Picture 1 (cartoon, protein in one colour):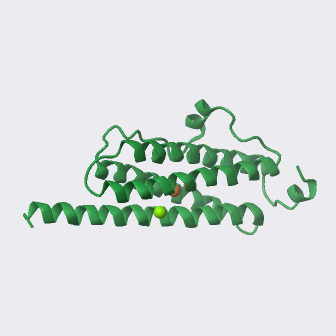
Picture 2 (cartoon, protein in one colour; picture 1 turned 120 degrees about the vertical axis):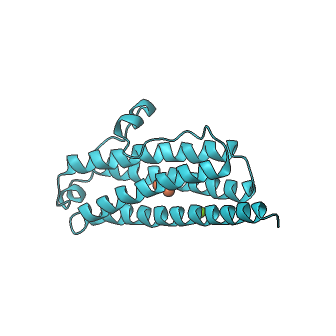
Picture 3 (cartoon, helix red, strand yellow; picture 1 turned 60 degrees about the vertical axis):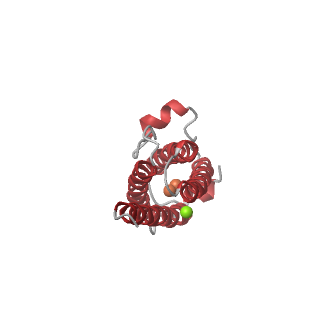
Length: 169
Ligand code: MG
Ligand code: FE
Ligand code: FE
């Protein structure tokens, strides 16, 4: 750890590491939720949804990497056991046991909305206090906002398709 790099952090570093480890645990669970969702998903527009899920899985994995590196820079240790992800997680894990596209989209939209809340809190907390962490959580927040929008756009297309089908067009 860099001593000067830590010295400039104008907040409780231990507490910050704890919050970053919660977000780190969320990211791994989100990564797996997308990854397995992309494998099991069924129904109309499946191909477009799979492409989105696969892309988001890669983003969540990249987020976990960004957080792990920052936790280590701050002198902490990223959560080392998958079983502990559940203990630390704020947003939890939703198993895609119903593989219908709409069910999977709904689950992941909820997950993104929780992630947006988490990163908005971290952005506010680090603003003006820890510019390095602030920059990281802001970048992640931007991605999560994009993720929510992407999934809601897919859901809208799906609902249009389903309603046209019901009208018999
Ligand atoms: Mg996307
Ligand atoms: Fe993420
Ligand atoms: Fe996301």
